[in-house]
Image (cartoon, rainbow, N blue to C red):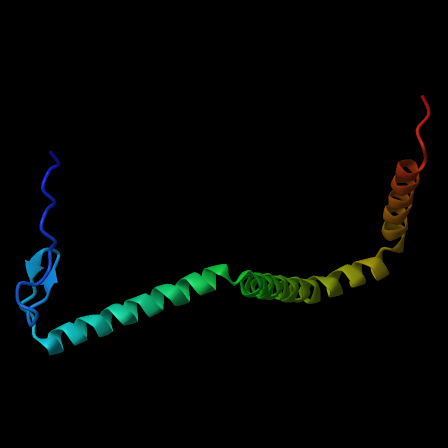
Length: 119
């Protein structure tokens, strides 16, 4: 003996559809409005998924953000250099011996770094 199959949840009256096993008492206009709202939400979901899957666009956006940050930093560095460079240039003209000594130390450090080390 097999168990009886449950009755299919369907409308008793074709003019009154069943939703989730309960009769749907909404008017046709209310149902249409709900369907339009659902379509709108579905469209937003599809758009969001398409955006997430558009890897080239994400790469371009990230590249643009990085470029903007780099340009901003470059502008700040240029501003600082424009403020600091004149005093450094003046100091170099007023104390050439100090500049020569600093350059000599720098050359020695570079040469020592470049030479192969012996054991």
